[in-house]
Image (cartoon, rainbow, N blue to C red; front, side, top):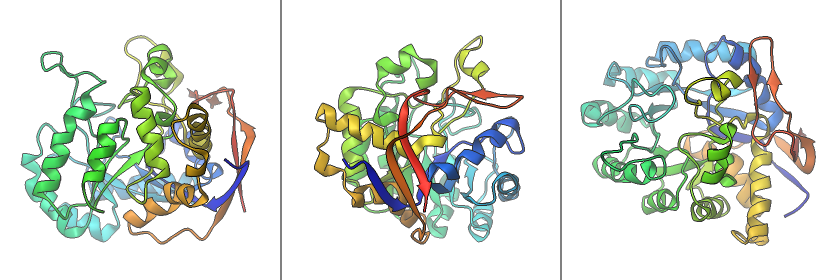
Amino acid sequence: MKDTYTLPSAADMHVHLRNAPGPIASLVTPTIRPAGIDTVFVMPNLAPVPVTSVDAALEYKSALEAIDPSVNYLMSLYLHSSITPEEIAKAKKAGIAGVKAYPKGATTNSQWGVVSFEPFDEVLKAMEKEGIVLNLHGEVPSDSKEGVTVMNAESRFLPTLRSLVGKYPKLKIVLEHCTTGEAVEAVREFGEDVVGTITAHHLSLLVDDWSANVHHYCKPSAKSPEDRRALLQAVVSSKGKFFLGTDSAPHDISSKKGKGNTAAGVFTQPYALGYVLKALEEGIARGDISDSDVTDEALAGFFASYGRKFYGLPPSDKKILLKKDGATVEESLKSEQVEIVPYRAGEKIWSVEWL
């Protein structure tokens, strides 16, 4: 790999910014653009009320723009029983980019999520007609009776993906935050309307890492060395089937280290691109990928162009410069109300400069 890369500005097609206005959103939203990113796809799983209407999505967007108006926020709805085909048509006119489906009980704020896709048949047909993306959290909930754990929850979901593609062949689908070789292969089975996002942290983490460090725990969880290798290879050979979606998920340190179960989520927003490049370096050192795989074209596609193209956005006309070991990850981000620990805190990382 080179020591510097000049690339188009990036698009992160899966971010969690939390409630806005709010203390976490106020702290993390300003970290998007310094990371070399000017377009983000914003998740709708807010609490205590998820984003289930166009009006709520537009209100949320305005609140984020009040924090940082220089970012292009692509908004989404939470697939919920209250959503109708008429709301989907309204969403299309309002520029809403997607509808996120959370299997009930599978992850953070998924208690209002989907048990079956059958009740949403008319909504999914409307999305297919309007060209609105279905964004899938690709796991089934853990169930000891059924033998489902975090380690096979994604694989158990893949028959549902195949069923949806078969029933709605023109529906644009994103299998979010792929973590397994099986998921990578499943996405590759289908045409250009089915793609996957890959996070920064799943390119380096393994199950042993998150089992020992609460700040590495997320849903879906990191898996095996073989799965990590498949993800790294997908990044450098994407050709449009995979693009960046960090699933950056900030939590106050009390939610990660307090009483009870730790919150699922890894915070990667401030150094998202650097984490990916660091993981690629490490992958080359292990032999998971070769140095020649990491081309400017592959990086520009994964970071910038593939995601924009899938969502019907024009290519970026802005440039960023990435420098190896040009920055150090903070130990934490703090305000008077919250403290958030970023991924790989204290480590040297690639820096970003806008050109």
